[in-house]
Length: 490
Image (cartoon, rainbow, N blue to C red):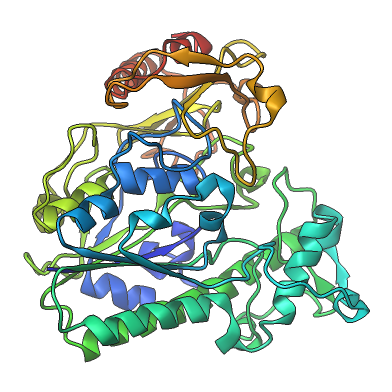
């Protein structure tokens, strides 16, 4: 058995031809849809980057107990379980958060791993010369001043050719793995790029696919995390630069599909193409993610699977699936028993004949809205009180994105009793904090059938009662901390 997972970051479903977009140049994503099953109802679980990747390992929701952080000592890791059952697991990635303190032990779950440096503000190269500061007039600078922006500009200085770009080098490493090992058996390749995550750094041949970009003398390819303040022409410019980077991602995906063809891998290799979440490009008056409610532009994601056991291609599936189902699917494919704490379910029968695996699913950010969808309705539960509490982190790995918790955060530390999934371990209980305050937006309910763009919140007591019941049942199944119910007024 062989499997490949090609993962992108912040890939917008509504920017792909397979999901109805008629202006983004992405022929290989269309080619992928013709070779795979396309899922129309895939949702995120925990947001953003590393919480989503913890779900890819553990197959259970992260966000009710913890924010950003590493794999916990009690976690069951899918690639590690495969490794223990003699499946060679290999990670290739330029997703630099894997090599910061807040993601420091995900890559070591694999049998082997390779990295490519240089995305975003990755502290990669040092160049202290004045030449690096000769960058064009920059709207990026207004939104992201300081060393992080300068580091990104230094990194770009070393990727002037497309073959030197970290995305290109990442896919080259993945293709090397396929060329070397295609005739062997029992391996899983996780090929992951940070793109099309912002900033939208790409090359002229992809920009030329899109007319109407702002003058080349203005640098703005890194949208801020806030409400849109820019005029319509700047919003359009950002959407076009995002599209240009998606076209570069499409080219890289085509290299993988070409290898699948050339090496005759379709006959015996599972292929998954996915993303961790989407991104707002001005919709609902917002840029980015995390600081606003998780509208479908962020939460409703593209997802494709080719399973050689059933051979279904060019078809669509309506069943509600989530990120937590991916590790369960891979374990089942390789014949490895699913751990009792894994809540995701294998998608073999869903791929084959659209067999449902759940009635509803949760998604959210630690301290944000707790969201529930049944595929038609999306219910976003906000705290009724402006203080958005109580809120605690439950972890044995007290680490933020780029640093450990500060000593000031650990002054009121306590110990919590074991949760059902911690295998008898007590965890640290640390006063938490949230990215933003969901109380500002209030509780929201949307009917996607009548209002697919989520522009008109629905007021229907009967539907809200039903969605509240589903949300509460799923929280109980996830062994949510008691204060989460209090925080949400449940």
